[in-house]
Length: 356
Ligand code: DNO
Image 1 (cartoon, protein in one colour):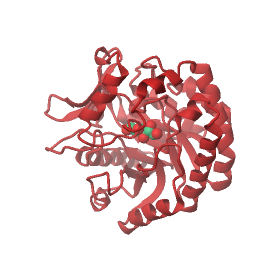
Image 2: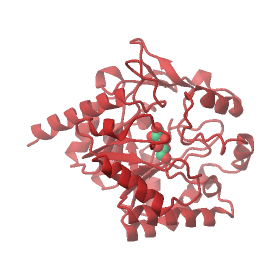
Image 3: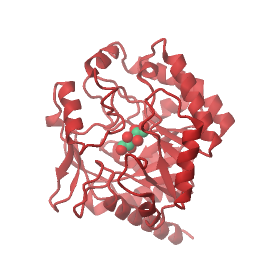
Image 4: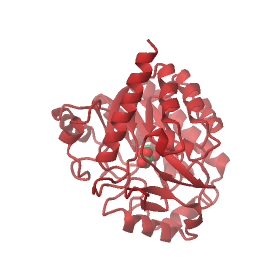
């Protein structure tokens, strides 16, 4: 297991790379170019500059996260072929600088969805939460809520420019049901995977977060059956998954260790996101500290499922709380993610040594 830490770039992340370098067990940065609009090419020289910056700090850049897929591809508009050509060029440019894994998602309109970005927990820390009774009817209210509560950060998947006319965007999805979204996903996968195979870049789709439909939009990467369907679009290690323990566990019917065992066992998992959540009611949860005792997920079983299958891909601690007075990017402050990294590396060490 190669352990990384997500970083939003010198312009957008208050955490300096030298602090990431000091987290025990963290050797990689999971990076991105957030200023490139969705659907445009990530220029090779910008990728090279990011890699050089990361390496100068004593870290490696082999995974990028949020090469987001343009809505024209998800909707299936005539413009999609041009956007797919851009995506293919981005894959080549990333490969030229040693990137081996792309984490992306296929959620219509939004990426992850929460009703609270700063939900106070009993210990005085703050975490993200979804309370299904608080989902507003109006999508404009939702977009404004995320914008105004994000602490001034622009959040990937919630770009204000892209969502300026969110109503029109939702209307463009009016005829896109599960079947059509799946067909458009298959079209995308079949178009890009030959390039991924030729250039050695593994695609790793992130599960829908939360894993159920919202605001009338379909969601098709929610559970093991959905993952098998994605796999069938083109059966190859290059068409894989970012198994996100927290996103999958938000639906208590998902058995996360079993999903890990199945898909890691078939070499379809180049990347995992490790976090815990606590269920608070039907369709509701808050994010918690990573420890099993703090949430609803047994993180020992999650890490054991990886270790038992000799997982040798990339992992990172996912969403942390704001603790010790830190006011971080929602889910992505330094302190709690660093604690989570140590805990997860500790589980890994204990499990892998015990198995010898
Ligand atoms: C949330 C992240 C996701 C992920 C995207 C990938 O914090 O795990 O936003 O980066 O879904 O496209």
